[in-house]
Image (tube, rainbow, N blue to C red; front, side):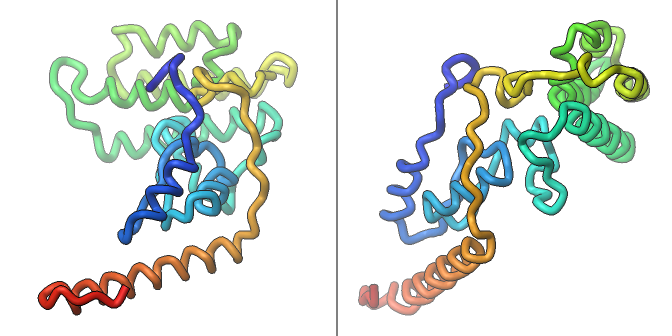
Length: 219
């Protein structure tokens, strides 16, 4: 399910899968913040988790040490998103995406940049930049970079009131309900629990390799 049909991920179903399998399980679904990462591991007992759509908007999602609080000011959030765009564009220059046709892989660059600054583009104040990025004549990385630089300059002179936005104005939240902040989990306890699960899984694999020929089991 996607777009307007998007619903809350069923972490309890993932927990049941983990409970019935003897192999490592990676949980997925509903991962938007570092708190979600901690919560899904605690809820499902999975050995790890992955994210997809949220990472398109915030590639620094797993940078826990520099994570922004969910209630950070709009300006702080937008400044972070512009910084991510500029870092991404520099990488795209070094490693141009492969693509066919006149524009090559630049359509992928435009798509990634759009998602990272979707929140800013949801503001009518920057609608012209959104239109410019989406225009067919914007087909080079330097053109996209110029748009991001223009946005950065305009954000600096905008007032806090002019760039204020609700929590639903994000790429991840565009088809979802407002953010529900997950409770903070004790990180040390969560890491210890994950390490214990990994050790158990290693023992299971060793037992399987030891007994698979004779059909015996030690489980």
